Length: 577
Image 1 (cartoon, rainbow, N blue to C red):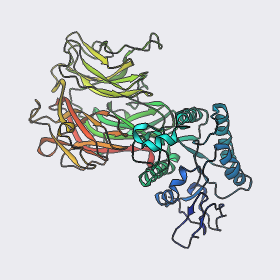
Image 2: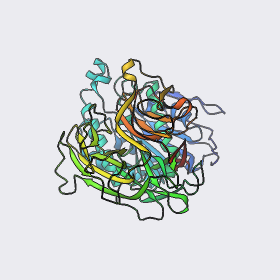
Image 3: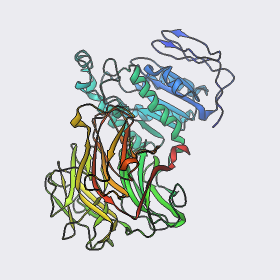
């Protein structure tokens, strides 16, 4: 890491600016303080962050500096200023004077203030701001999205006060997303998603203590990691065999694929290195989203798997276990079995009507297969909902969703499904949506795997109390719900329901200490991911969340041999360079 040298003065500009730092830095209190020139010791450009903001972002002064102690952070702002005013008053003078405030990274936290909302004018203001930052030598531009205020999350008085202008906040965010498509160096910090909760402001938009901490953490994570983004079109080659407990000669690995902070909508594709890149996807995501999906990926040349990212993003790969060389599991070239958009993209599959998909005698999947590894993606839906997946000759008596989807982005999930006697599966959604099905491998007839209708093992909602953050939920799996005591792994769907904030959920063998995650959550939104987890101490798996949330665990299959579950380990994380 580049050594950071702080200057002798650190002065904020704002309605009330107080800089209280150690190491001889000036303490300044004022109703409006102009930014002072730093002293002779200036941090190198990669370690400087310049932030322009209105009154909302001013709520992090002091907090952001504490969150990014290894950076020189200069915050300049004033309440009620519009984007073009921030550029004219705070940025242009610095650009013209070659100010040392400007380093590699700049943060713009503005857009709330528009006396008369003019979309075309706002687009020009964004483009002008970005142009000036580039002129000043900035390489990474982070723009913070606006909180989209919901009535149920603010007090009656706050709701009354926000009425004249809250309505255009979503429009601002949409224009920022369009700007990210125009400008490859623009990154959106998705405060809109993180702030979708009741406890982050003291009115409707201005940050309270918790809000300032979350806002600063969001920015800090991007500042620290953006330089290591995998560029659009990158292929990451990840060694999985011969390391982390996976032997040389392993046939396939069970992995969890995660993206975080993608700059726009896109997808990941995983396959065996050395083979042709397939025309399928494992994970679809929206800009700024952190989301995960499990997969079984064949091990390729050099003991590696390859992961393609369609847009600039961070990519994380965790290994859950492996299929030995003599396992009955058969890998196939990832293949698309169904896409309701194929004939006419304007026609959306109707709600409640099963989509029948033949999954055997196709793509190398043999007839009579006991189970098929597939990915189901739901897209083009205008409302939130769920998707059920089942053998067409055996509808679920107690429906349990494979995919819980949200509007505005495609939502995938992995599953191992048993075909009907005629080789088909049915997929039914609760609302109109497009349905995409990809296949990755299968278990031939007689394999040591049992695939059943999902059975619920845990639902903390039935007990009333929400499990606290970082507490372990112990889920016995072997010897219960039909699982034999010699099962080597359970295929489980883990759902976080009504999480209290943004965070993660991890499923792992009890008695181990996992440093990975199974799924990522945002406030109030149900999220599901499938995992293949080895039973641990007491024949149980453990589920741990970083935030308080209800947890549901459903088992849909178990494996008796051929698969070796591991304590999940991180094989790749682009954030670490």
